[in-house]
Image 1 (spheres, rainbow, N blue to C red):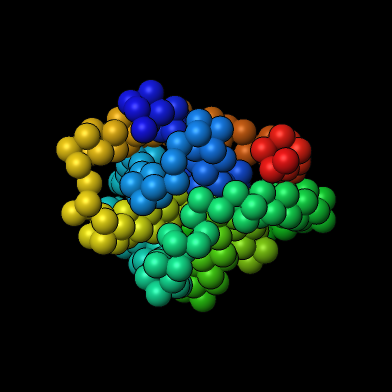
Image 2: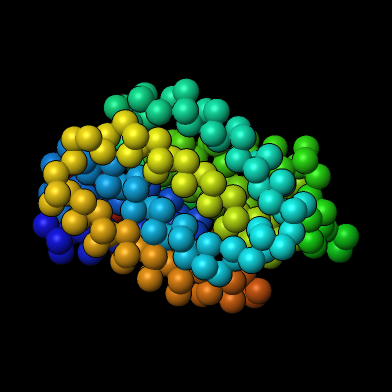
Length: 257
């Protein structure tokens, strides 16, 4: 991997982390297009640079966690299912799922179709929960279970979380904000676990590449988050569902021949 590759992947991560299109899936597909060898470092790179995008959430939303004990506790409750599942399945996920293009394409296509169908049938109720602090602990844990589905590459963490929240009766803006906050402990823990298990094998050059990807994803994510918050005011996620299907089909045709 060269610095330009790290820069490109950082841009892709920053754009896709909070959109319902799967940042991990896009990083895997982009790595294939760039002909990057499927090394253990590349798998770690794809996990660790996500923390750069999450840092953008800390900058934009950190005050919410500091000033609201209720929101903080609900976020931690939602984090528990993914923490347990991710810790138990970490080796399996990194060894067999990360880098698996077929898994990514199936997940993108099926997830896209589901997103379109969901948006077609879902109607937000007038009394939908508007404040993140009003989310019950039961709802928070269920949202966390939805998020844990995204351990499969190509299943978007943000899409899973948002759909779960909408099904539970939350307003779209509320669950999007909650999804942003939930990303902080989720990706922070994923990065810490991977660094603990893999950092000893990194060279100084590897850390340089990680720094490029990390900083790039952080800067790009600052703009992506602001754009998404404006977008959801007047749009559904149907377009993202169609995009997922198109990407999956194109890659099946041109990459999997």
